[in-house]
Image 1 (cartoon, one colour):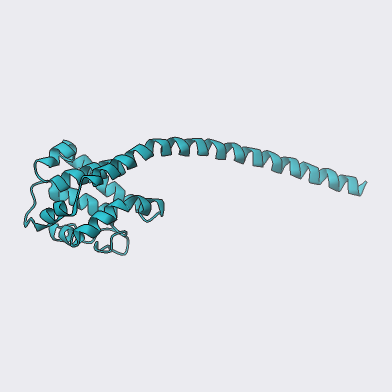
Image 2 (tube, helix red, strand yellow; image 1 turned 90 degrees about the vertical axis):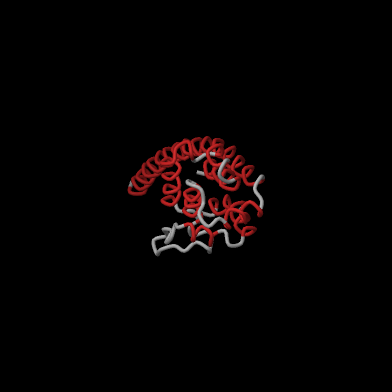
Length: 176
């Protein structure tokens, strides 16, 4: 009788565990569907961001970094880029909490010091996201710049000022 009670107790525990596992499996399946949906939406945006970089070249960034004072808004586009790449690009100085230390035009020039490397860093940005190296709070800072600038933060808004800034806008809009 004692053995039978033990078996019944263990069977009851197993049934509870089975029910808990089924609930977890159901939640995981729902999360998987949600993640797959988010991924399906994100992939075209990442592809658009990558295409935006394909039209940019080193010469565009050389011209941009050579400007002593950029046209209005161009500095903010580069500031958004600095926020996105904080902790990823070693040319961007960050605080202990991971914030960009200096968002001035001079600091943007430092980020673009080697235009070829800067362009490579942008093209590799997707991998930094995949590797979890991109801070969500810095993405939000870039998004705030985009939102505050409104229509000026666009390819059309920047193309009259700088081809590099226009391409960078398309990249940033699609990556965030």
